[in-house]
Length: 96
Image 1 (tube, rainbow, N blue to C red):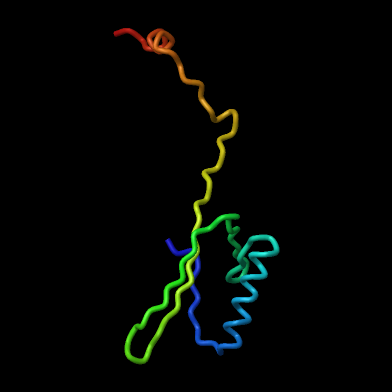
Image 2 (cartoon, rainbow, N blue to C red; image 1 turned 45 degrees about the horizontal axis):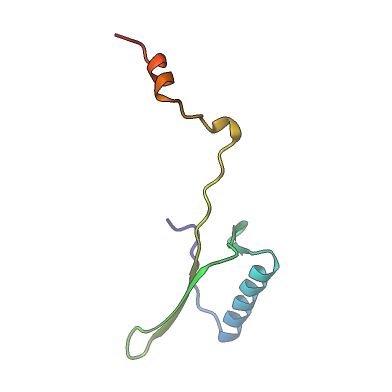
């Protein structure tokens, strides 16, 4: 599921500035900002990949990808159910 995607043609200098901006965001508070008001918090440890491909005789591509696992939210204390023993389950089950 895509959260955000942006594609555009920029100068090499603008690309370098954008990469520096991303690096600054990662170093400062670990959030990457996107779009009008979106942000994603990057984990302290990530898997990263650099891929350089020759797409055709005249086109090259460089892909930088990093990913991480978002921990599942913890359940509130009132949402955690205590398991019942077999005897308690038998008592709780109505007899036919």
